[in-house]
Image (cartoon, rainbow over all chains, first blue to last red; front, top):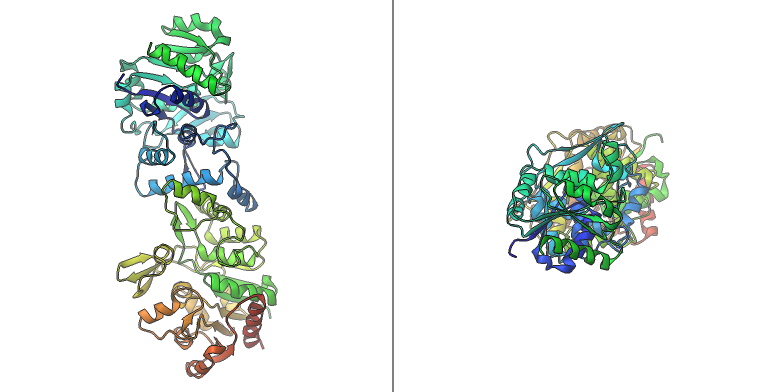
Length: 311
Length: 311
């Protein structure tokens, strides 16, 4: 087993799964390609929510309940910002802010997002490779009855209350995969799509030119873990988005979105009866407990996925 | 007495003097024109050190000993930034950061620096008008044996260790005085130049087109308080700059820099023997205690200056 285990990751759900994976294999063998479609400029700072969530989680520093931000962080700056009448809908912890300041400063000096991400991960003791899908800007925009919304506007400020009629990734015409991404997929020993929202977490990654093609071509087995259990998303708006875009909100519905490159689809025991639907898409269905309630659950899921990928 | 009391201000020294002034007259009658030549973009944030020092001080929130930053602020973000290997030579408190985030966000939305400054002052309960010298960027640069240095690079990062051979204000060709500045000077009941560095605090203000001319023309009496006592600066590098630029480091040396527009020059008792030198410049010399050790000292100095200006 020479190539890395490559993971495609969004935010909190993915990070929890990766925590399990890093508990089962040597973290240095993980190559995580992270969505940057959620990135935003807030108060002039470059925020990369999914990169931070994955990095903080793999560093063991993420907030245990929320999943995002840092455990034990304070919010003094945000409180002072509120006093000034500033925008405070985007939660920024005091220590978390340092990451955004560091990233913004390095980017303005000409560093690439992958260089900055690597430096942050190294400083926090993360041994896995955490890599943005692209160093070029890609921005997820949502078509809603109110018009097109910026991702953070939809997701945080308006708390996902709008019906999503369509998703668009601005910037994909020019965005190239970050250095090493296509090579890692081509040489991977296994690839896994984390249990993340297929539209707004995995969708942007697949929309970067060359990545979907590389996933289709790699010789490595490719698995995906369903983010939908019992017709509901484990976290976030995946299920309601599927419905509002005219799809079934179900595990096989997600599998269908990945049918051109996924070999193994992992669904929860609650959805065991749907396994034949998945198999009809030409994938192998693995039924196991996918709801990660604690570290044991994460480890167990990671083992089940790895056993299916690398028996 | 209809017009405002207009003050020209740099950072900590000026703010302390203004605190006294605001204790003697109705703060709402003060119009403070503040140096923005020290402004800098740090970590992508727009920092206005002198505006913040004046605003925090008049709000009663400034750090009592240091003079800059907020009393009781924490530095968690900065500590986290250090862990990341980021630049930490510019001290940013957690609550102080909110001011920079707010300013940066509002400016990027198209607000002017004076609008943002007014909003911050209002939110913090400051009744005096705190006004940047210009809404347009002016940047103080220092000629040194190492080449030209940005202001914060010279002042904070390199701790004023370089010999200053000259001072230049980039941007003055285009910078206009902020709205209300020229009118306030023209209609002032009195004008006072705070005890600030004449080159790097008052110099940039005087370099904005129209301001020096307005000071020469106003019918209001104009006073200046010496920042040099006994040949030494009360704070900062004023004395060593005077010497390295070939001047005498003395109160009359400062007076000479202002001779075209100042009527009354206030010098410390320690420099009483120099009063005739000041008077030879065509100014009235007022000798009083100018070293403000506490609130009583500030009040006493403010009273002495006001009595000379508005007998």
